[in-house]
Length: 278
Ligand code: NDP
Image (cartoon, rainbow, N blue to C red; front, side, top):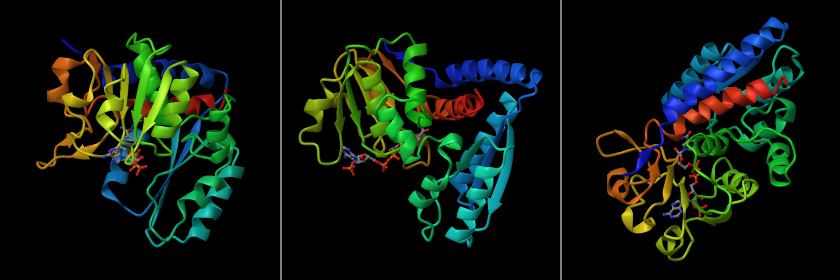
């Protein structure tokens, strides 16, 4: 019988711990402020931004909202980022992605001061992670490490297979699992015989954006499954990259979608905001 890794519960525990830390900092006169920038009104982005602001309110972090029209130019956005970089009140800067097509996301990410890069996407943050130096770590992979640790799952010495090599999930995930002394394999769309590789995994982390792609044939008996995917099925129901019902009887632990990795991503964003003043 598989254990369900309850991301909702674990993220609430983490946010409660952060809430206490934030209250103690406030007693010492330290306030934390996160600038949340959204360009346009993509409905999914509006939901994510809303959830992030809600989490800020819960933990006691001030969220400063910048809602810009879709027509905002790259120069205008860059100048806002520069203003926020230099604003002593602002501790963290979050520019919600994706940005409209006429804005170069990389340029914006690189413009954010690494000291305020609470999303952990700046090349300096990514570089620091890969050479084991201090810096902000991308929230989703950092949240997965917390989920595993707080669920009592040993990482050291385990075979970890990550499916997906994006800059925000797959690659930083691999670095973090290496840091935790797992043996790491990264797979992608050009991997030959994916099943053969994923079946070696003690811990299988899937971030590909393909509804219910991973079935029981892809998993080893007793494996731990982390499903990062957030997709909509044919009934518009939120579901992961893993076929949950199919793999459930075969695995030892699994994250559900929703209620697994998603809530941890936001909790880790709050954690990064707190780290920004420590
Ligand atoms: P990207 O689209 O940036 O990357 C997808 C990766 O999956 C690529 O590396 C791609 O390979 C690989 N891939 C695609 N199809 C296959 C396949 N058939 N076999 C093997 N590999 C494949 O996705 P993201 O990393 O941004 O997101 C992945 C999923 O995670 C999405 O559903 C997204 O919504 C979700 N997500 C959830 C978050 C959360 O908080 N829960 C946060 C971020 C993302 P290649 O490089 O060769 O193209």
